[in-house]
Length: 297
Figure 1 (cartoon, rainbow, N blue to C red):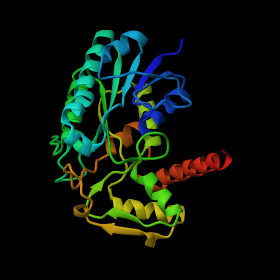
Figure 2 (figure 1 turned 135 degrees about the vertical axis):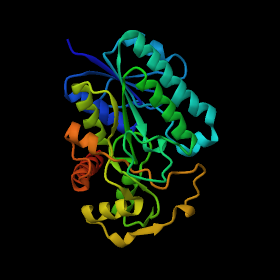
Figure 3 (figure 1 turned 90 degrees about the horizontal axis):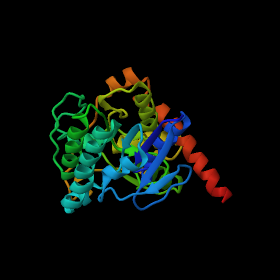
Figure 4 (figure 1 turned 60 degrees about the vertical axis):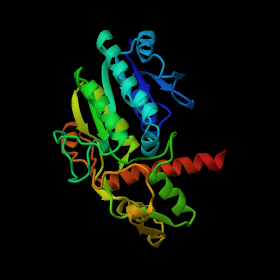
């Protein structure tokens, strides 16, 4: 009998790729979405703001992968109550339900639990969020770790699939049309392909590993990342223009350098997270598949 896994936030970019990877390895995957249905994955609509524990009682999974969150950093700053309800309260309720029913839990978190003054953060570095989004995710982490769950911190997620627009996808789409892309030169993170997050969750689920893992790509600025995409895809690099973060007009403060030390994840999961060419090879292949499907429709 196949084991069931619930993936919340399945209509997000990482949630969708996680669900696909788990389905490939034989899990019976049940996706959960709030507003946007998805294809290829059996999914149900469920409002996690109402009764998260009932989701687990209804479907009795062996594993819960909790991806759903309000990930818009500026929206969280402007609407802290709704952000807290989804990112923290719903997570705590899912933790309670998981503990009662003996469900293992994997939680997708963020580099924004750090203040960004140091960069290359290790798993054991003390968190200190500087925006409300980071705070709500940190509170979710603490709840998950209290039941010996698994926390995946990631950074600057990009890739194709459903969900909100992401920077990597925007870069490819604009450069492929010959448009200029403006990219921040004085802020650093760890751009991470959504497909590799799915691969990491698959391995973590198989190995039943608990604790914190930094599943993230190499340290780069958005400008460096955009140039890497342009070069790898064969787009004109002079279309990539540097801008300072002060010109972007963010409403919520962002860490200056929230890049993550990923050595522990690389060693344990055997995924080449620091190999940007490997990531961009997968990214380009998915772009070509997306273009082909679009041309045929």
